[in-house]
Image (cartoon, rainbow, N blue to C red; front, side, top):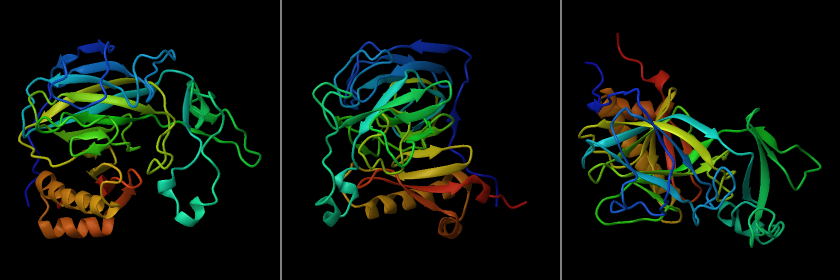
Length: 332
């Protein structure tokens, strides 16, 4: 067998860094939104995202919610049929507080338990004026710690290492479809996958010239499946660059990390079962292993069967299939 068959990638790796604060935020992934900035492959871009309610790093409301998006960024040279690979070089907390829901979503529990569970309301205006179902979290930027401010548990300390991630990474979908920043799909969108953090690369199919890339919905921490319906919501400082993979013909999102390659069966929550998302992720991984890594189809099937790990990306929504890079050893 020859070496891996890798899609041709355009990446100039320019030294220029663009500092791009947003002036206007959108809440749809739409190819007709005015371009925020044209960027070249390899250019490092620094920008900021708002939290899911529209507040910035100073706590000032800059947009309505949910999930206002920074962008769109027009990637020069990206054409329909290509893929864009967005690598996040930095993803950092930039303020000392965040918030989350007070209770797991009813979608995550059995009907008999739901009848007995506590109401979602904690305290009116505790985090956002006019809302009672949020609880505040303190973010220790120096120690990279996430700590529940209130209420206090008598049993444990709700304090954990922060793991910053972006919930929304997406491009404009095909046609004139303009999905909101709440669901996900083949174009990315509100993926809410907790592996999309610093060092990760998100690969998305291009449907319009320039791809029209949007970012948003920063989380200081989020568990698998996003079972509260949110993470610890906060604003974020982000540095990224984009490469173009020509004629990649992707059908959905992929994620690459130093440790693994990942296919996502991405669909809007409640659209279909997790079974369908698992099927989508598995089918794409077979194609990824064959096209990008040169495996025979039968070898891809067996590698998935004995090295694959499935992860719930969003409860009632998307699934991911993870293959460790250590298992893709080339024959000497």
